[in-house]
Length: 271
Ligand SMILES: NC(=O)C1=CN([C@@H]2O[C@H](COP(=O)(O)OP(=O)(O)OC[C@H]3O[C@@H](n4cnc5c(N)ncnc54)[C@H](O)[C@@H]3O)[C@@H](O)[C@H]2O)C=CC1
Ligand SMILES: O=C(O)[C@@H]1CCC=N1
Image (cartoon, rainbow, N blue to C red; front, side, top):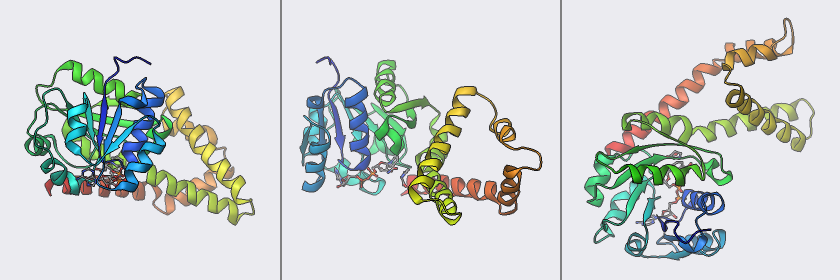
């Protein structure tokens, strides 16, 4: 690991900060000693230091900003104004990256009084190196900052640059999406148990099926409908299940869920 790697800070040492720091250390070539996080809660600080060996945790947001080349803002959207107020000044040497749902670049610039800001929407699979991140850069930001952000995010999974107006939809789709997939996994597992499978067997088969199906989409580039058709034999088992899902409005329910999550992200941006 190189000592030239950036010093990476986190305002908020909660679930997402820990998951991203874990990826950045284990896959991004940043040593634990280059990571610092601030949190008002002692328990959160202790957990962060335990999970990220070599990292430092403090109760001072300003210390994090002063010591970091890049600082992730990883507080809840409702705590954003408090976090900003706790800072005297964001030095020009620090690139800020917000991961908060809904909080716009315009609001971030006004709260933190710096133009050097990037807004990201990650998701929790960053803990296992499989996050789906999208990000938007503030106007006028240097290409070097975009490249550095992309590299740090890619240590946690994939990272796609999008226009900011698309970030609420990203939040509804891939930010919240893992929760919807976990619900599907839970329901499929319950169905297996209902049909007599031991729960551990049903859960392993379900999770591997979801992982395998996702990998088929990514690896083959085939349309999901074509992949579905390949599973669906004439007069067979799959079409019987597909018919039930269509009758119960499966696709409509998923579209409504992601629409509601997107709209909530837009609302959070107006607080
Ligand atoms: N949980 C998820 O799946 C995702 C969350 N996000 C975003 O990530 C952000 C963090 O979410 P989580 O990690 O789930 O929340 P969390 O509640 O686990 O972590 C937030 C941490 O911020 C600390 N905090 C509160 N006020 C603070 C302040 N003034 N200064 C410094 N730290 C402060 C809290 O003590 C807490 O430890 C949110 O803005 C959320 O919208 C983004 C993508 C996915
Ligand atoms: O539920 C939330 O507000 C956060 C943002 C995306 C996923 N979790």
